[in-house]
Amino acid sequence: VVNFDGANVNVISCNKQNNQQWIWNTIDGTIRNKHSGQCLIQVPELEVWAGPLDDGSAAVVLLNRGNSSEPITVHWSDIGFPTKDSALVRDLWAHKVIGAFRGNYTSPPIDPHAVMMLKIRLFAIGKKNY
Image 1 (cartoon, one colour):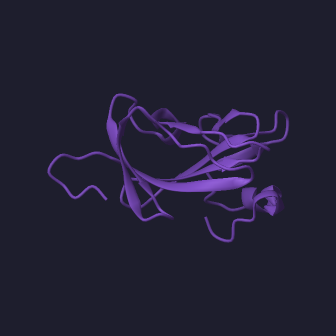
Image 2 (cartoon, rainbow, N blue to C red):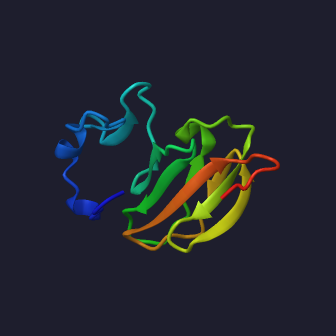
């Protein structure tokens, strides 16, 4: 995510990019995959934004638009990973591997109007996984 400014993001201009995989649905106010229609917003004011990286992992942003600290869960199915597989979760801003998780990851409480940025990669035995 480059120059992310929360509420000031112009969704219309983002949707005009040819490589955009997620689109804003003006009917129900959700963000959906333009191919499958899958929604990444789990509950009002808690959002999961994701996109693939060249190495097969996913960049994931957990965004709390609410007024209280809340944990946010990203399910592997949200980002196109098999739900029964384990994946390594890395906090990109803390530069720390959080751990390996199976099926989903639930963040610690995220402050109001704040984000957590992750790199999630399917766990491969015998390889450097970060």
